[in-house]
Length: 298
Image 1: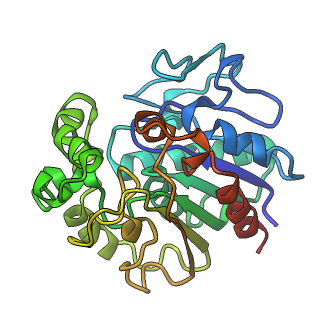
Image 2 (image 1 turned 180 degrees about the vertical axis):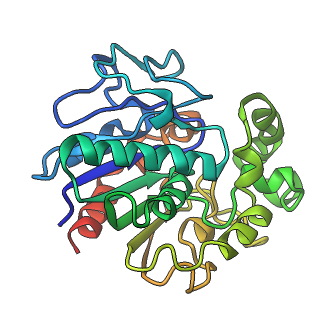
């Protein structure tokens, strides 16, 4: 069993550094991605931490946006804080630095990672960076991670268009807004979550997950169409097939358990936008928590 569990948030998510006995003093204790999952895992005997992340380089003091937080008791340096709108490898370098710091600070020899969305890609890059120079990573659980592309990235490359929505209003709205969202928020992240980029990136990652037990969890609330398969079904941001890493080569992903939640959406942002209870979001769903529990004890 690992010495600690670290939760990693995804693209454009702002997350404070939290530990078993400290979190943001107001608002959502661990940000709008990880608060519910953290609360669930705190009941375990293993200490649980969240990796700090923000939009742009810097430190995490607060999130003034939707369902944000303030009064963060421990603020870590920018060097160990993930730029959640930056590139995968840069995010992995920062996350690896955080994990090394955490290991040195608390004497952890091994850590398990639970990552949401692009956080799973940051985590994969961090595992690569840590080989031989940091805590060992025995388990990686990814929730809605774009292993092989996302709606946002695939719109930008032109592989997916509004035409592919097949009349589904929710999907059409998401696709129509993707380019504008990327222009406003991305500092490299949006370009790196396309199928085109990730298939090439994956070819350079063979061997780095050897020895890591991976559980890849996807959701598929939006299921109007059947084609193209890189889109349908999807959770609002990531296709179920991509989140489950269905087409990732075995030399890149040798040990994996794949799980599906067909009624869930990507995050509470999508749950709120489509009038769904937050419990239908991957990082707030008690049924997903049960899968995470199983993955961390198997």
